[in-house]
Length: 107
Image (cartoon, rainbow, N blue to C red; front, side, top):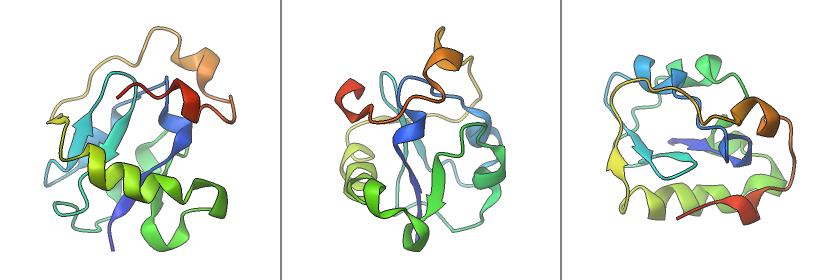
């Protein structure tokens, strides 16, 4: 079982999670992060670090966020690894509480 980044990360891209990942399983897109399920070792360290609570164990992903399991798997094959913390997107705080923003995902 891998961990999954869900919708709350879109247009925020806080990277606190990247700093604690022991296996560098995060991948970076233009306005979203994903976890490579083949690299994730299920350590749970990233969950507590995410300020927008966007990371779930695959078995705990809410029903409304199930499509993110497949998105993490497919996008992780296309995007580059991110191994160091970066500044969040400039308007991350404004987007942090916004719901239904899948249409904002840049691939």
